Length: 276
Image (tube, rainbow, N blue to C red; front, side, top):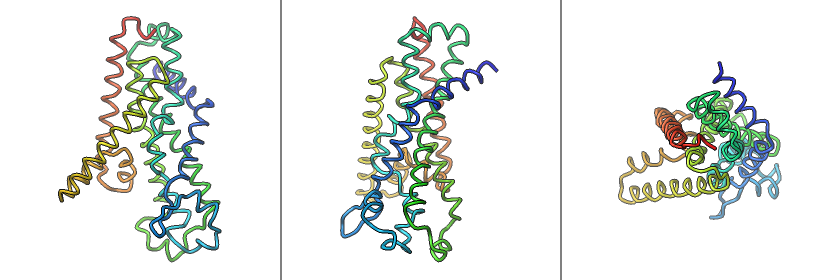
């Protein structure tokens, strides 16, 4: 019971905070920078469609419907800044605990393992909630700004509209949990929130860029199967998992999260001052 009270407190502090609101709004805003449509070799963002293309011009076109633009809302800027935005509600407060010496007083009362696990789980959950909240706000804007699916287009979908929306939101939640893994691990070796957020951003970029390079090389060599397998290690692959593609890879990401929690506990245990 002590652990669940601690987790509840950590999660409450992360969610009921201005950082959470700012991160969710920023993530939702970045969704409008995603490519909504390609025309004559030029990429048109969702924001451009909303500002410069009237509803009557795009009405009846599936690719320009609110539903399709909602599915296409995770763009390169969302991917790039996800580690910072997902970590914003939880990492700075944890760093303040360490720098201010509060963690040294807290650990003897609740135990190092409980404190580490509570922080880790609250960080994962708040990261997922940031992304799903921002993406959900973007979805409401798509519903208000763009025309809906016509009955003829809806009948050609492989799954009902509500199922596609729910699977996309579930993917967004787990994408936020994946994005915070690197900043959460760095919190075990540094007390500087700025360093953790920036280094997490840089390492996440290097990781994604390395996967892109490797996948492209395999594709150029004609090894399409291995190229696809490499891209399933991409952070946004959780969206495909919830669409029914190789859902077992969620267990792989879960194992990665468990490994990060274990390394975080090891890092905290090696600090002789117990976090102060």
